[in-house]
Image (cartoon, rainbow, N blue to C red; front, side, top):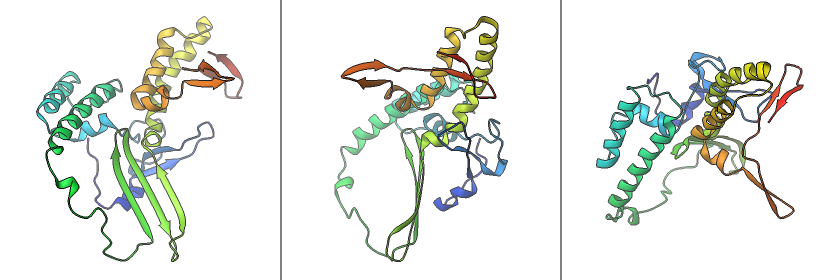
Amino acid sequence: RVVGEFSDPAAYTEVVGEAIASWNYATLPYYKPAGLKLFDEGSTIMVGPLARLNVVERVPGERASEEYGKLVEAAGGKPMDNVVLYHWARLVEVLYCLEMLRELAGTRELLEGDLVNPVGSPRSRGVGIVEAPRGTLVHDYSVDDNMVTTRARVITPTTINNTAINTNLGKVSARLVREIRSAGRPSPETATTLESIIRAYDPCNSCATHCVRLGGRELSLSFSIVVLNERGEVLWRS
């Protein structure tokens, strides 16, 4: 559901907060008005194809619009919060892009006019928020009187989704720990579920980094699970 809107890009700081955890290399963004409640779905933020299709009422394009309707119907209406639906939503957006490309290819608007507008005086701060395929991307830069960058802040879609990813992983991880305690190892289904959660949010991150070259030989590093206790001791390793 839509809980708020803002038109000034710089106002994102009033909506998105970032927490830091010692166990994670990325920050953990959260919905600021709800307060810092990590792993509470009330303050968790999601971006990307599924998030976009949750907040729109329609999708342009004949085929894309039809598939969008099928997605919402299959999900049982909105909000669509099953992370597996990210893949379906991504396909709907790809179909929309293909239809738009066909339409744009027949116009000259992209080839006419100025690409850069030099009118106006320089500003000391610039904030840009765009929708990348993977989700909302924030660029925030400040410069001094000599146009030297004094501050830079970038929040990528993967970072914004980081809290949501870990919230979903946490639910399954509880089952994983129970299986380790009872059987000495998690079931293959549980491990597969953990991997599928990550892939649903950010397939680029999990698919493009599972091979490494060592002495000219490729090693597969598709997925690794390490379970630690509160003292940091390894209880189980895949």
